[in-house]
Length: 461
Image (tube, rainbow, N blue to C red; front, side, top):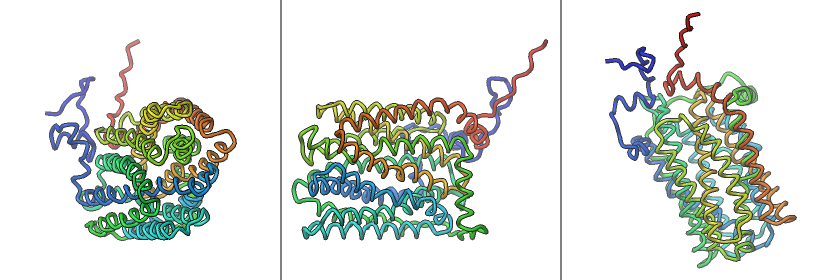
């Protein structure tokens, strides 16, 4: 029997692939079991395991690189320079990479990026273990990793939809949103485990072994990619040139208010807020008077907050309400940074890093999910390249700015300033939210995420 809505009219059947249809076909499930529904796809399970191992190594290397730079130079400015060198290639190349991602086999591209990233880490390990490493090699190898990431991140984000595809090439966007959240979960679980391991390894045997462990960890993700069984589909040969596709993607991004607004907010967050990580060695050593263990604890606390945030996103059954979470996350992130800059207590700083990590990941995960839900498949690679550009590409400028400001005014004052800028960004996003939701609604109605508005009958005169 067809159900009726509150107006007494028959409710429309849920759209294929929508959360409503999933619930109708499979029956009620516990919220906890719903949180890992993307793992029912064998390809995503392989990816999940491989990435869980590899990302621990990645975070070990990030902490080891920061500590190595600070040990070699003692300079907050050079911490910013290394961060800039490692991320500026993404800003410059991500839009072109997005076009190329749509023209290439994404699994093969990801295999190559992982192999090259492994070689980069192993070379860094050799130079460090033989004690010939200088700041110049660190900067050069960081730039090489940034070049790899410019292609890896758009390919990885757009490849998620293939890993949760059903019925041949048909994507299941309900499972896609869960896959994005689970992917964020493993990133932040690694962010929790990796820094803690890095602190112990650096204290025991030095940074070189951290880089070696990272290089070996890439074997897991390469193996998982090669073991996947994907539906073979020919890569469509575009009829337009690379520059024409690039322009088409740009026009789509700036012309569609929801995507444009979200990307502008996170470009600001990446410019002003995300670079707080490059200053963590300064806070650990000079503000809180600790060492590599303190650095690991601070980064780990941020990772705990981000992990719990990602888990909360995975437990959601619908994308409805995520724009509100983006708004809230901007305020949490900014307030956490301002208070962290004021703190001189390790216990309080750890609590504030937890809040900051929660806000940061809630915003990033929610924005990624909303964008991937809204975007059409033929523009996914290009749109995700602009997401990469906003998320990662603005960070090098922020790293350079943070390093310069910290050198001049000190790390605490720098973080207070950048946190305030994030709070202002949250206020601006709040003013745009009503228009954003209005433009999103037709797409959500077409997908069956929300019910179409029923015109109210005219009242008799």
